[in-house]
Length: 204
Image (cartoon, rainbow, N blue to C red; front, side, top):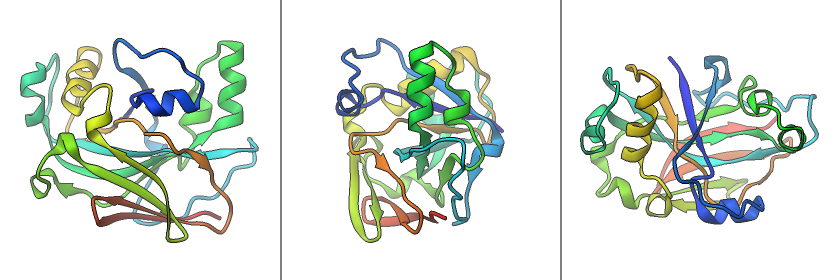
């Protein structure tokens, strides 16, 4: 099982990170399987960076083998979605960017891919107009809608399958909207799709 993720997929998020350009194609990076954090397990703040940010995202799970998938058929390759958190070591990422180095250690460390419970996409009226949010200690801190994606879920799947054979169980994090902030020990993070709570993790 592999985890693929999309960077810079919401224009407002790009602005808050001072990225002034819009990508012409999806920006794909990966996380190892050891990054996965699920079943409500807590996230333990590592000691190798000073700032860790939450990035709330819609996550899709691939349900069949696919390579070079046409965009018009991409909807057939996933039937379940959830909300996830791409936890980023932000100060480390900024240092790596400045030096022109890869992002792997700031994005792929253990526990950095938090996922909630998966639900069938048929339970939602329109995947391309789907609201999701994150609450910290019962206060909404980040909100997004899939209609604001630069690249849709189907476009992401089609593009990624040009480079990677997608296999059953693979996960794709589809990008975060504006509103990222630093996490702190003691916080309770809860992720929602529409009004449905699917994710919970405690920061320790």
